[in-house]
Length: 288
Image (cartoon, rainbow, N blue to C red; front, top):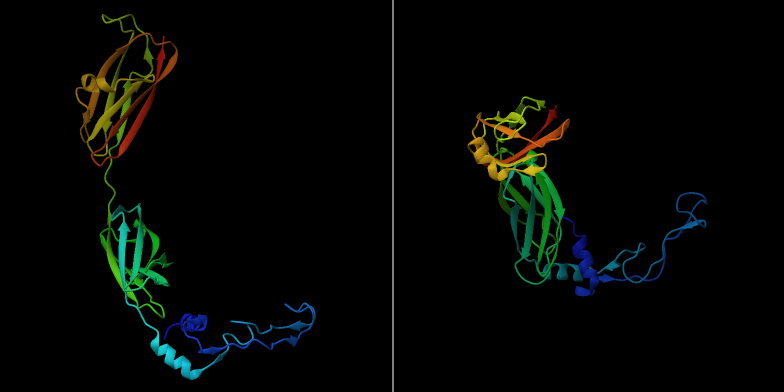
Protein backbone atom coordinates (compact mmCIF):
# COMPACT_ATOMS: atom_id res chain seq x y z
CA UNK A 1 0.00 0.00 0.00
CA UNK A 2 2.88 2.40 0.69
CA UNK A 3 3.18 5.30 3.11
CA UNK A 4 0.06 7.55 3.01
CA UNK A 5 1.44 10.18 5.40
CA UNK A 6 2.79 12.53 2.68
CA UNK A 7 -0.64 12.54 1.04
CA UNK A 8 -2.42 13.24 4.36
CA UNK A 9 -0.05 16.07 5.24
CA UNK A 10 -0.57 17.52 1.77
CA UNK A 11 -4.33 17.57 2.31
CA UNK A 12 -3.91 19.27 5.69
CA UNK A 13 -1.62 21.96 4.22
CA UNK A 14 -4.52 23.73 2.55
CA UNK A 15 -4.84 22.17 -0.88
CA UNK A 16 -7.68 20.06 0.46
CA UNK A 17 -9.46 22.25 2.99
CA UNK A 18 -12.09 20.55 5.08
CA UNK A 19 -10.49 17.10 5.26
CA UNK A 20 -9.24 17.73 8.81
CA UNK A 21 -10.88 19.87 11.49
CA UNK A 22 -8.14 21.39 13.58
CA UNK A 23 -8.50 20.97 17.34
CA UNK A 24 -6.76 23.88 19.10
CA UNK A 25 -7.78 23.43 22.72
CA UNK A 26 -7.19 20.73 25.31
CA UNK A 27 -4.16 18.68 26.27
CA UNK A 28 -2.97 15.19 27.15
CA UNK A 29 -0.94 16.20 30.19
CA UNK A 30 -0.78 13.57 32.97
CA UNK A 31 0.99 13.40 36.34
CA UNK A 32 4.41 11.72 36.44
CA UNK A 33 6.92 10.71 39.07
CA UNK A 34 9.56 13.38 39.61
CA UNK A 35 12.99 12.15 38.55
CA UNK A 36 11.73 9.85 35.82
CA UNK A 37 12.74 10.61 32.20
CA UNK A 38 11.15 13.79 30.77
CA UNK A 39 9.36 14.53 34.04
CA UNK A 40 10.62 17.95 34.99
CA UNK A 41 7.76 19.35 37.07
CA UNK A 42 5.60 16.38 37.99
CA UNK A 43 3.62 16.46 34.75
CA UNK A 44 4.18 15.12 31.25
CA UNK A 45 2.30 15.83 28.03
CA UNK A 46 1.44 18.44 25.43
CA UNK A 47 -1.13 21.15 24.74
CA UNK A 48 -3.19 21.37 21.55
CA UNK A 49 -2.48 24.23 19.16
CA UNK A 50 -3.00 25.47 15.62
CA UNK A 51 -2.01 22.93 12.97
CA UNK A 52 -0.35 19.61 13.69
CA UNK A 53 0.33 18.92 17.35
CA UNK A 54 1.10 15.95 19.58
CA UNK A 55 -2.36 15.96 21.15
CA UNK A 56 -4.74 15.50 18.23
CA UNK A 57 -2.31 15.22 15.32
CA UNK A 58 -3.79 16.81 12.19
CA UNK A 59 -7.19 17.07 13.88
CA UNK A 60 -10.44 15.21 13.51
CA UNK A 61 -11.18 13.64 10.13
CA UNK A 62 -14.11 14.47 7.90
CA UNK A 63 -14.52 11.04 6.30
CA UNK A 64 -16.63 12.28 3.39
CA UNK A 65 -14.18 15.02 2.43
CA UNK A 66 -11.23 12.65 2.87
CA UNK A 67 -12.62 10.14 0.37
CA UNK A 68 -13.72 12.85 -2.05
CA UNK A 69 -10.42 14.74 -2.06
CA UNK A 70 -8.30 11.59 -2.05
CA UNK A 71 -9.85 10.49 -5.32
CA UNK A 72 -9.27 13.92 -6.83
CA UNK A 73 -5.52 14.31 -6.18
CA UNK A 74 -3.74 14.09 -9.57
CA UNK A 75 -0.95 11.57 -9.97
CA UNK A 76 1.85 12.42 -12.40
CA UNK A 77 3.79 9.81 -14.34
CA UNK A 78 7.59 9.95 -14.35
CA UNK A 79 10.53 8.83 -16.45
CA UNK A 80 13.91 7.82 -15.06
CA UNK A 81 17.17 8.00 -16.97
CA UNK A 82 20.49 6.68 -15.70
CA UNK A 83 24.00 7.74 -16.69
CA UNK A 84 27.42 6.37 -15.71
CA UNK A 85 30.45 8.66 -15.73
CA UNK A 86 32.81 7.43 -16.98
CA UNK A 87 31.14 4.60 -18.87
CA UNK A 88 34.26 2.40 -18.76
CA UNK A 89 36.53 1.81 -15.76
CA UNK A 90 39.16 -0.66 -14.62
CA UNK A 91 38.79 -3.04 -11.70
CA UNK A 92 40.50 -0.48 -9.48
CA UNK A 93 38.52 2.50 -10.79
CA UNK A 94 35.21 4.11 -9.89
CA UNK A 95 32.24 5.74 -11.61
CA UNK A 96 29.37 8.00 -10.59
CA UNK A 97 25.86 6.73 -11.33
CA UNK A 98 23.30 9.52 -11.67
CA UNK A 99 19.57 8.88 -11.94
CA UNK A 100 17.38 11.72 -13.19
CA UNK A 101 13.63 11.47 -12.54
CA UNK A 102 11.35 13.82 -14.50
CA UNK A 103 7.65 14.47 -14.03
CA UNK A 104 5.50 14.21 -17.13
CA UNK A 105 3.88 17.57 -16.38
CA UNK A 106 4.04 20.47 -13.97
CA UNK A 107 6.92 22.10 -12.15
CA UNK A 108 6.74 20.07 -8.96
CA UNK A 109 9.75 17.76 -8.72
CA UNK A 110 9.56 14.07 -7.83
CA UNK A 111 10.60 13.20 -4.31
CA UNK A 112 11.65 9.95 -2.68
CA UNK A 113 14.48 7.51 -3.21
CA UNK A 114 16.22 5.73 -6.06
CA UNK A 115 17.69 2.23 -5.73
CA UNK A 116 20.65 1.25 -7.89
CA UNK A 117 20.95 -2.47 -8.61
CA UNK A 118 22.98 -4.91 -10.67
CA UNK A 119 20.68 -7.89 -11.05
CA UNK A 120 19.75 -8.84 -7.50
CA UNK A 121 22.72 -6.97 -6.02
CA UNK A 122 21.85 -3.64 -4.38
CA UNK A 123 24.62 -1.15 -5.12
CA UNK A 124 23.09 1.64 -3.06
CA UNK A 125 20.16 4.00 -2.43
CA UNK A 126 20.07 7.76 -2.79
CA UNK A 127 17.52 10.52 -2.08
CA UNK A 128 16.25 12.67 -4.92
CA UNK A 129 16.93 16.40 -4.96
CA UNK A 130 15.93 18.94 -7.59
CA UNK A 131 13.50 21.57 -8.85
CA UNK A 132 11.43 22.53 -11.86
CA UNK A 133 9.86 19.14 -12.41
CA UNK A 134 13.11 17.18 -12.33
CA UNK A 135 15.25 15.65 -9.58
CA UNK A 136 18.39 13.56 -9.46
CA UNK A 137 20.23 11.19 -7.15
CA UNK A 138 23.78 9.82 -7.39
CA UNK A 139 26.02 7.16 -5.90
CA UNK A 140 29.63 6.14 -6.53
CA UNK A 141 30.40 2.54 -7.47
CA UNK A 142 33.76 0.81 -7.72
CA UNK A 143 35.08 -1.68 -10.23
CA UNK A 144 35.49 -4.27 -7.51
CA UNK A 145 31.70 -4.32 -6.96
CA UNK A 146 31.00 -5.22 -10.58
CA UNK A 147 31.78 -7.89 -13.15
CA UNK A 148 34.84 -7.57 -15.34
CA UNK A 149 32.58 -7.18 -18.34
CA UNK A 150 29.67 -5.03 -19.49
CA UNK A 151 27.31 -4.40 -16.54
CA UNK A 152 23.69 -3.36 -17.03
CA UNK A 153 22.73 -1.33 -13.96
CA UNK A 154 19.16 -0.33 -13.12
CA UNK A 155 17.99 2.76 -11.28
CA UNK A 156 14.48 2.30 -9.85
CA UNK A 157 12.48 5.25 -8.51
CA UNK A 158 10.08 4.05 -5.81
CA UNK A 159 7.44 6.70 -6.51
CA UNK A 160 5.43 8.85 -4.10
CA UNK A 161 1.76 9.59 -3.40
CA UNK A 162 1.68 11.96 -6.41
CA UNK A 163 4.39 10.51 -8.67
CA UNK A 164 4.40 7.07 -10.27
CA UNK A 165 7.41 4.74 -10.01
CA UNK A 166 9.75 4.41 -12.99
CA UNK A 167 13.14 2.97 -13.83
CA UNK A 168 16.02 3.27 -16.29
CA UNK A 169 19.20 1.42 -17.12
CA UNK A 170 22.76 2.21 -18.15
CA UNK A 171 25.78 0.16 -19.11
CA UNK A 172 29.02 0.39 -17.15
CA UNK A 173 31.96 -1.62 -18.48
CA UNK A 174 34.80 -2.86 -16.30
CA UNK A 175 37.98 -3.78 -18.12
CA UNK A 176 41.16 -5.45 -17.00
CA UNK A 177 44.01 -3.04 -16.22
CA UNK A 178 46.31 -2.41 -19.17
CA UNK A 179 49.63 -4.23 -18.94
CA UNK A 180 52.60 -1.99 -18.15
CA UNK A 181 56.27 -2.26 -18.92
CA UNK A 182 59.01 -2.91 -16.37
CA UNK A 183 62.37 -1.32 -17.10
CA UNK A 184 65.56 -2.16 -15.26
CA UNK A 185 68.57 0.16 -15.49
CA UNK A 186 72.14 -1.08 -14.96
CA UNK A 187 75.48 0.70 -15.21
CA UNK A 188 78.72 -1.18 -15.77
CA UNK A 189 81.06 -0.79 -14.02
CA UNK A 190 79.62 0.67 -10.87
CA UNK A 191 81.55 2.25 -9.25
CA UNK A 192 83.29 3.96 -12.18
CA UNK A 193 86.97 4.77 -11.62
CA UNK A 194 88.76 7.73 -13.11
CA UNK A 195 91.17 6.88 -15.93
CA UNK A 196 93.74 8.62 -18.09
CA UNK A 197 92.03 10.87 -20.65
CA UNK A 198 90.85 9.12 -23.80
CA UNK A 199 91.17 10.61 -27.27
CA UNK A 200 87.92 12.52 -26.74
CA UNK A 201 89.06 13.78 -23.35
CA UNK A 202 86.78 11.50 -21.32
CA UNK A 203 88.21 10.35 -18.01
CA UNK A 204 85.29 8.08 -17.10
CA UNK A 205 83.91 5.29 -19.31
CA UNK A 206 80.80 3.24 -18.57
CA UNK A 207 77.92 1.40 -20.24
CA UNK A 208 74.25 2.02 -19.49
CA UNK A 209 71.84 -0.82 -20.26
CA UNK A 210 68.03 -0.78 -20.22
CA UNK A 211 66.16 -4.10 -19.99
CA UNK A 212 62.39 -4.54 -20.39
CA UNK A 213 61.22 -7.50 -18.29
CA UNK A 214 57.38 -7.44 -18.37
CA UNK A 215 56.84 -8.10 -22.07
CA UNK A 216 55.48 -4.65 -22.93
CA UNK A 217 57.35 -2.41 -25.37
CA UNK A 218 57.85 1.17 -24.22
CA UNK A 219 59.23 4.50 -25.44
CA UNK A 220 62.11 6.22 -23.67
CA UNK A 221 61.20 9.87 -23.33
CA UNK A 222 63.61 11.18 -20.70
CA UNK A 223 67.28 10.74 -19.74
CA UNK A 224 69.12 12.87 -17.17
CA UNK A 225 72.63 12.52 -15.82
CA UNK A 226 73.62 14.50 -12.76
CA UNK A 227 70.55 16.69 -13.17
CA UNK A 228 71.30 17.54 -16.83
CA UNK A 229 68.78 16.40 -19.46
CA UNK A 230 69.99 14.44 -22.48
CA UNK A 231 66.49 13.58 -23.76
CA UNK A 232 67.29 14.90 -27.23
CA UNK A 233 70.26 12.53 -27.48
CA UNK A 234 68.50 9.28 -26.51
CA UNK A 235 68.25 8.03 -30.09
CA UNK A 236 71.88 8.88 -30.90
CA UNK A 237 73.18 7.34 -27.67
CA UNK A 238 71.06 4.16 -27.68
CA UNK A 239 70.25 3.78 -31.38
CA UNK A 240 66.49 4.10 -30.74
CA UNK A 241 63.95 5.54 -28.35
CA UNK A 242 61.90 2.32 -28.46
CA UNK A 243 62.69 -0.39 -25.93
CA UNK A 244 61.18 -3.64 -27.30
CA UNK A 245 59.23 -6.11 -25.14
CA UNK A 246 61.82 -8.27 -23.35
CA UNK A 247 64.41 -6.22 -25.25
CA UNK A 248 67.58 -4.33 -24.45
CA UNK A 249 69.04 -0.92 -25.27
CA UNK A 250 72.65 -0.09 -24.40
CA UNK A 251 74.97 2.87 -24.74
CA UNK A 252 78.71 3.13 -24.07
CA UNK A 253 79.36 6.62 -22.77
CA UNK A 254 82.26 8.71 -21.59
CA UNK A 255 82.37 11.72 -19.31
CA UNK A 256 84.79 14.17 -17.77
CA UNK A 257 84.84 16.98 -15.24
CA UNK A 258 83.14 14.87 -12.59
CA UNK A 259 84.28 15.56 -9.06
CA UNK A 260 85.59 12.51 -7.22
CA UNK A 261 84.51 10.93 -5.10
CA UNK A 262 80.85 11.63 -5.89
CA UNK A 263 77.52 9.94 -6.51
CA UNK A 264 75.64 10.84 -9.69
CA UNK A 265 72.01 9.94 -10.27
CA UNK A 266 70.92 8.69 -13.71
CA UNK A 267 67.19 8.91 -14.37
CA UNK A 268 65.15 7.46 -17.25
CA UNK A 269 61.46 8.01 -17.93
CA UNK A 270 59.08 6.69 -20.56
CA UNK A 271 55.55 6.10 -21.78
CA UNK A 272 53.80 2.80 -22.54
CA UNK A 273 51.31 2.31 -25.41
CA UNK A 274 48.49 2.48 -22.84
CA UNK A 275 49.64 5.95 -21.81
CA UNK A 276 51.09 4.76 -18.51
CA UNK A 277 54.16 6.71 -17.45
CA UNK A 278 57.16 5.29 -15.65
CA UNK A 279 60.46 6.48 -14.11
CA UNK A 280 63.56 4.52 -13.11
CA UNK A 281 66.80 5.75 -11.63
CA UNK A 282 70.15 4.48 -10.46
CA UNK A 283 72.95 6.04 -8.40
CA UNK A 284 76.45 5.62 -9.77
CA UNK A 285 79.61 6.09 -7.73
CA UNK A 286 82.54 7.93 -9.39
CA UNK A 287 85.87 7.32 -7.68
CA UNK A 288 89.54 8.19 -8.27
